[in-house]
Length: 322
Ligand code: SF4
Ligand code: MG
Image 1 (cartoon, rainbow, N blue to C red):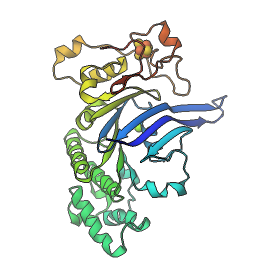
Image 2: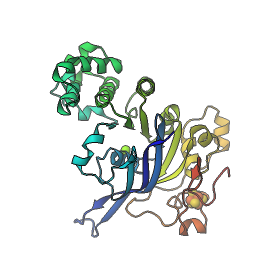
Image 3: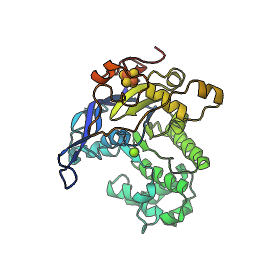
Image 4: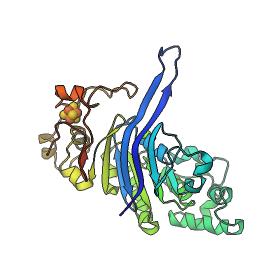
């Protein structure tokens, strides 16, 4: 299995401008030297607290952001620094779905017209075939064909997410970045959307990067999971291995923030997180987690731990479950 997408040394920073309240200019180091592989047909989960840079990785992959440094190899071609014009041939193959699709659905257009747009704007099908394509998309995501005449406000949150997915599918993508696609939905609806994504993956041989702040949905859909903290990947591995033998203290804390089936086990293994998330504009020295890690030692304050390991990799000087 070859990687469909390979990220090497990715840095995506947001400039901070000098203003009345900030005397110095600088950068928010949203993604700070990240390397990752996403294999064809897999779901890679990406978890971490809000503001840790997960969405920025997703947005860099679909090139809604331009990285400062690094490579993004998609099917062996570096797209990290391509212009919008150069990106055109791959643009359709990399799609993103968002937490709130409502904000991106034009309220004055009928769903049928919204779904017809990609076909017409990108000439993906001759105009005469578009109505049939729209029907097929609605069917694919489990919505009645007749819904094409309705407007976005007539749908529930779950239905709107189905429409968001249908619109992404119009492009016949290879990779879909799913950025917290169920975080805003009721738990009962979440499972329906996750099942839909899983079914579509099988039918269409899709590859997903599935981003979430909690481990719940990620555990359900992913084969591998990457854990992110302050712009860096701190641990990555196969789901079961990561759940059974987490190596990074932060991963273990994230896992235990997720309700365990056995409460006695949960309490026995609990370790507590201290303090607040530091600013990604000015990350701590050494290991970025040292200000909150219950195991931090002098070495952690001085030396940055590299991400080491083949299949199960961790960035920690004193990994758990060695
Ligand atoms: Fe904690 Fe040190 Fe490991 Fe960082 S390197 S996670 S501070 S033990
Ligand atoms: Mg986000």
